[in-house]
Amino acid sequence: MTAMVLLKSTALLAAIIFLWGCGTGARYGTEPFEVLNYREAGSLEATVEEGDRGRGYQARPGWQERVLTEKELVGIGEADPELSPSVSRQILARLNVRAPYYIAEDIRMGRPIRVPNDFRYYKDWTPMPDSIAELRHLSKFILIVKDIPFLGWYEYGRLAGDTHICIGREEGWTRSGLYSVRAKDANHFSRSYTNAYGQPAPMPYALRIYEHVWIHTGDIASGYCSHGCINLPLAPSYELFHWADYGTPVLIVDSLKDLDGSIARNRNHCLFLLGGCSRTRSAVE
Image (cartoon, rainbow, N blue to C red):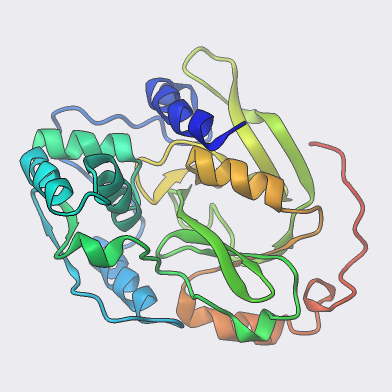
């Protein structure tokens, strides 16, 4: 599947989001936008900026929560051809932890969203650490930070890719801890949840990390909208699925402030050692 096919598939994903069963199935019409979050929204906003001040931080002009118009997006693209309205919506999706088709709806409905003061400084923005020196001996490593919420994958301690995500909408539904990729299934279907038609919910490009919790393609209405799985946009989900190996370590932390402590506590775990744990392919569950 080419990158062009993946981009075209995003439109299809937007048209069938009601099929997902791991998410809440929430849809937004004329009602006010509400973040599905078990924390205060203010703490989430603060954490995003705290993440931006993490390893590899570069000063940026910041953002503010306000109404953005489509006319403004067009003007931004005219001023900088690299910031077309579609690219700017992708930036907004990452900053708001919300799928681009929801962002488009927010703009159309006049809902306040987080808007960069200067989009140029957010072309390559990420709240994830650029590097994790303590893990430079690991060829592959996945980090999930719950209060941003974002996922990054690392090669020898350097960030290779990242994405905004959706995790469990209630506290404890996505558990912090050290796990690993235990199963891979490109065409996985949920055994616990059904879609709008009562059929097993599709969970494409799925990586199982513990029990019935998977990292997979899914709808992202907000950062906290699933039954416990980690939902990713289609393109990064496809990339991560083909990048990850059986046994790749997966660390889930509550916040970036907990990262150093979590690494220190698990320093002698086989997943953090050069030899790794016994890596056998588990059957798809």
